[in-house]
Length: 334
Image (cartoon, rainbow, N blue to C red):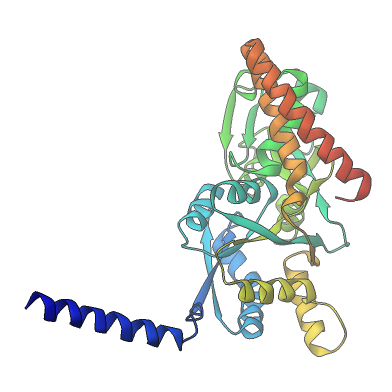
């Protein structure tokens, strides 16, 4: 009995082996749909109609349905990509870097604005006529209520800290009488309505607010602008089928280019998003963000006073700063 079972098993193994020799490995199954994440910082009701035409065009070109996924904060978007609830998305620079570091993602391309620039700026806004100047803000004294952005926002938090507050040794929690975290749109509303005295925003957010709320936007003025920041990027999980990923890359890089009715229609879609189109980029596009993060780490180490930690943070900053400086020399517009 044992011998017959052994022979039967060997026979079955041999048959399976012969069958395998005659077959090619199964191709990776094409997904039925992809999920595209979008930060609904301005609110989903206003953002969905702007993005849906682009996603419809993307679905038609790559041959797979693309479904939007809206979230109100960057952490949700990063976690959704980390757990493969979304496969591709529009990220500003800081959460794009975190998606690369934590969600096994990579940059497919970068956004350029309607004027052709690949950068935008973080800004501080106040209500017109209140006499609040940058010097008064930096004097601290817990005089003002301050609106900051999402903790993972490039323009709402990282840039104003790295370029404005940290170099002056200012900690917002000690400088202002109150600090509230909210979206750019919420901060703009709060400034216009006198609920906050000063808040972070960005040049694109101010543009959107002026388009959607012109009367309120007329009550806002910018008192500080950062150096140029890398514009938003398109990020995808690395494990997306390479052929599909290449179709997506080609879709973005050719969208709104060329002549004819289709290209004209695509440019109108981009106009609604305040974009001029997309350009090639890889993960090195996020080097300026790495530099700002390293600067903040170094400042925090110096505040702590631990010499070993300071030395480690300094070495990390010097390495990243040198790489970023080299990239800026080659591509001064980035």
